[in-house]
Image 1 (cartoon, rainbow, N blue to C red):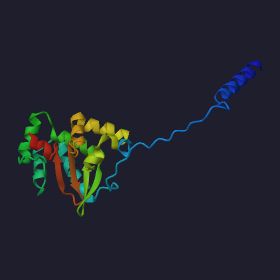
Image 2 (image 1 turned 45 degrees about the horizontal axis):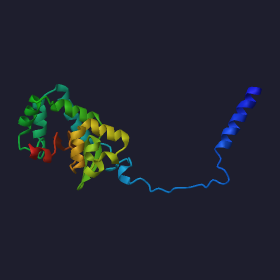
Image 3 (image 1 turned 120 degrees about the vertical axis):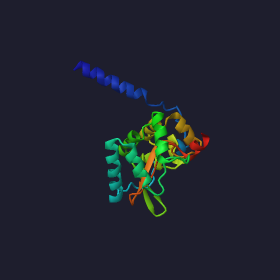
Image 4 (image 1 turned 90 degrees about the horizontal axis):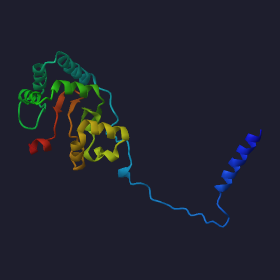
Length: 201
């Protein structure tokens, strides 16, 4: 019982110490809110739209090729698209992907990683584009790390590294590997660099 009395007395004493004296003025300081640019926010592109049947069918076709690990089949699938883009250097899909493989970049493995991850949607004209990864659907100003949530900021760093983030800060769009399919099932592109990067080579 005596121990409880001592503990209660100590708590009351601490509470009393925290109260200002009657003669001590109270100062309140007002500060401006942090600017929006340094506050992490969830960036929005479009409300994510479920994959259309045509887009799911195209993904199924791509996954068949990936399961067979056949670059020749991937080339045929891409070549069947009238305006498919794999590079900005004017090389054929076959030549470009062969060159990448020689440098240690496996187009098939990278495409599989993309399609296993999250996508986002953008409306382009009257079309809906499904874009992988989801961060690639953001405009450059939305990709600045300080405007992303903490988890997306870490993911962006994993995807594009410091060099890619420096490009984003310089005003370029998403500088990593990306792919897109529209709602009609047309495979639009599978690229690993931007037009700016290609022009610098």
